Length: 215
Length: 215
Image 1 (cartoon, rainbow over the protein chains, first blue to last red):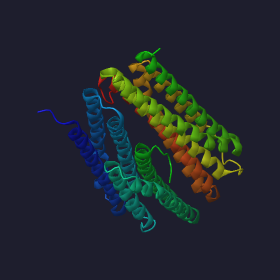
Image 2 (cartoon, rainbow over the protein chains, first blue to last red):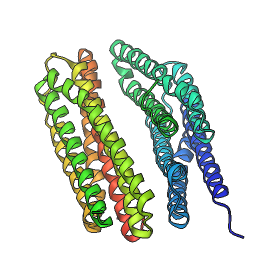
Image 3 (cartoon, rainbow over the protein chains, first blue to last red):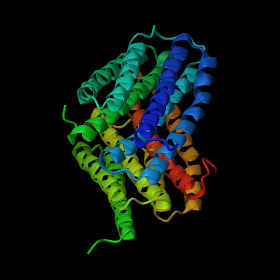
Image 4 (tube, rainbow over the protein chains, first blue to last red):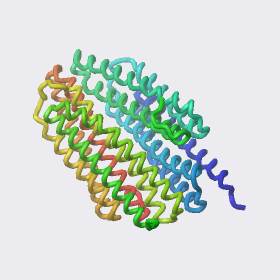
């Protein structure tokens, strides 16, 4: 029996959420590896990135096939195209997690210059925002999308704060420059992950209301 | 008279190339602003980013409308979907140019810690690669796509080299840390722009041959 069209869209959304969970786990593990200086875990995150890349290609393929087979119009077409675009956002987020894992290797076993507080806090915010932005898409929840989009500023402020603090460390003690630079990049990767969630929310807002950046 | 379908696709491709030129100019101007410490030019790049964002939305809309109206299948459908994805890559590249311009403001009128040589060289490579990756798409030139994809390593090596050199500057003279950090981010933004060209090439390769990362 031929699957109904709306069943197929629901399946696509579920696959996208599955990819979202994979990516969320990659972010979580990369920062856990950083905190615990667990190089094996960092390597796992980097190795796992191929699986995320494959998932993107597979999801895009399914989107294209569904459009070709069912020739949807209007809202349905837009939904499928957005899923295919979100797959790319998720793949890029996976790249950032992998980049964080690379920094873990760069730091190696050298003692951390300070206990990590702001970076895990930032990680918590960006993973929650990622989850919420995908929920906003699945449920077409424009209020949630607007809320999550607004919170981007919070992440940017935290990133600036981390950068400033690390600069101070570097100026006080040049032997800390290398590690501080690696941590700066970690912060910047997290900030980029945050930007992707904002992009996802903007797509949801545009899809539902035709408004852009209206928050 | 109704436009032929292939005329419409050709138009889309031309619009995409126009967006490509806008983005290329933004990269060029942001690095010119850096070299000449021209804060006004940097501001212009940042202000111009809205125009690039609008272009993306407009191009995506046209892609979606064309799919809805003409219900293309197979190769044509894939081409339109890829154009819509390239629009997103170009928009993100525009963001990076704007980020470089932000760094120009961060450095301000403080004398540059060294004459910029590698950053302009890297800029030349990434803008050429961007242009060539779009050409590879328009002409479905898989050999060009493979060549451009391979050159990503060159950009990565240059980025690493710039980072290492800046680290040395910072360690020798902590008063240079702030500016060196800004320059590091410029280098990293250029490296990200390079990654987008690689993504574009990979899409072309996949579209034409079904191969992934086969270079």
